[in-house]
Every structure is written in C-alpha cells, then in structure tokens.
Image 1 (cartoon, rainbow, N blue to C red):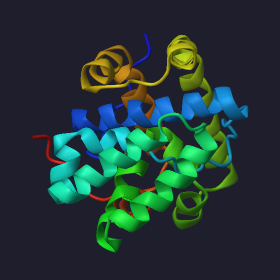
Image 2: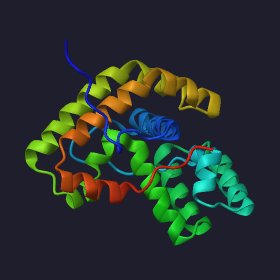
Image 3: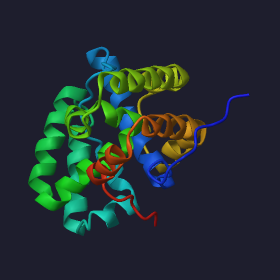
Image 4: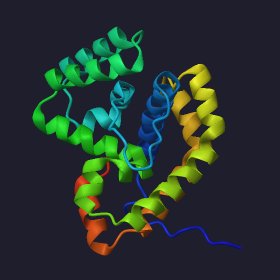
Length: 210
C-alpha cells in the first residue's frame, strides 16, 4: 500500500488558496476550450482571474479600497462576454490601471499559489529555481497524472463554464482538494532545500482566511 506524500508547510496552504486555484483552473479550462491545449509541460502562462477578487480574504490581503473593488467588479462585468484571449488581455490592462505596483506584485504571488503544481511550469519560476531536466520531467509527469484525475471536472467546466460564485467554487474545492494538495506536495518533494526556500520567496506568504 503506497503512502501519501508528506506535506510540507508550503503544501499546507489555507483553504482559500485551494479555492483560488480552482477559480484559476476554471479560467485555464475555458481557455483550453477556446484556444486549444494549454498543457505544455514546459511552459505555463500566468492567468488572470477577476472572480478571485470577490473573496474577502483576497480583498483584505491586497488592502483593496472600496473604490478599487467597485472598479474591478465593473471591469469583470464588462469583460464577461469577451472570449478568453481578449478578456485576459483587457483584465491585465485594467488591473494595471486599478492596482498599485505593490498590489500587482502580490496578485502575481497569489496567482502562482493558486496554480499549485502548474506554477513549476511558469518560465520565470523554472529559471529562478534552476530546475534540472530531470526535475522538469518529473513535474510534467505529476501534472499529467493530475490532469487525468481532473478530466471529468474539466469536461464539466468546459461545458458549463467556470465557477460563477463562491458556493459553486467551494463545491468544486470539496471534490478536488486532495488531488491538488497531493500533486503540489509531490512537486515540492522534488526540490532541494535551497529551491524550496527560493520557491517560498517567489510565491510569498499565504493569505490569512477571514
């Protein structure tokens, strides 16, 4: 009987990040349906998920003002009818105008946390960690296995869209929580102690759930 991988502190992210990750994953799945495969094992683009800004914990962590929240909500409403590529580009542009540099940097950290094991495919993360070819291949294998586990959920999201609200996202969390955590923990075990330290600095501190 195989043992589950031991979870390090980096793997034990609060539930809000599992929620954040499924919102991000929903964005990625819809992108797959509209633009073809995005599961290149060697490269992952950091997505933009405006839905995540509805989470009180995220709003508090970013110290968003009511004016900023209102502008992001308006931006999200205006972009809902756009295809992913256009929506993503306009969301990035809109956030750059709404948030200050410190907030934008933190959003990037939170998004990387939300990506889970996929964060190890983001080019700048790979470069900063100095991943070996063997590590890259092992991460690709972990991601491929996770993708198979998530296929039924991906099919449903592609058909019906990503989670539209907090309850819907929570329901998805309950069904996929262990899959994400185990894949993330396996990837962390591939890193050297120095790489784990660097990765912790890249993704920043976890949010304190409200």
